[in-house]
Length: 297
Image (cartoon, rainbow, N blue to C red; front, side, top):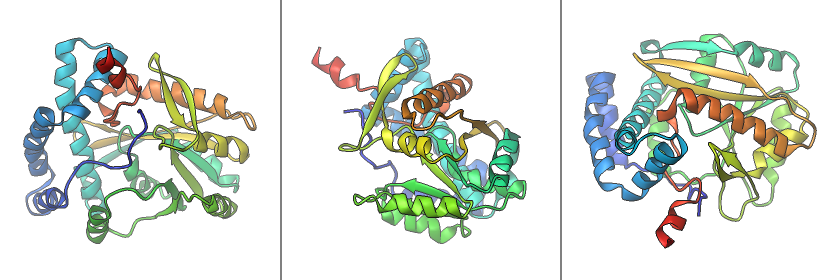
């Protein structure tokens, strides 16, 4: 199955080791240790290796040998984004530089005082977006709509070493009470953020082609965003060289109650980012539901 199981790799001890080196020696020292961690993942995480190799080889069209190289680079880049997130959250924001592309779209949405919906993906490093907004003095509340399936011990530890975030979490509930929280946040001119690229078993989904192959996407973000009659913006925060990040914001043209049309616009947006940043696709599972089929052949 191509749905995500809600769990990410990593142990509490691993995070503590990286935090120690970040604080005591520096960010680059943590990057150095990351080579060994990435090598371990590359050698031993066969299931995620197959999934990310498929992405590079079949969906991006890289050769077999280049795809193998990209698998290692993908783990290393993903690790860097985690280190960067920890560093920035712990008060080292001034170590990084930031570039803004489309920020006027966010300013315009806030000026309309209707709130807005941000839709991102598990590409780049969207979790540091709030620190971007601080650079340009945009004072607003972000509400991240999410399940609560991450490892609570790691989450609690990271919260203990981080500065107080300007992000509230709206937890998806079976009784749909999260919909009322979303409406209340929008009424307060706050931003609601979804990721549109992972669905869970039993949840409604929509099917469409991404990078030339059919995949399934969570229906919720697109159903909700297409019905709210508020600005909808695709937002990505992409890592570049030398501790530099680039924020992209693109306004979506949304027809009322046209969830499928919004999904198609989202896919076009994601594909354009992945063309420029192929390494920063961080869905390490059978996203296109092709690997199980290959095994059976």
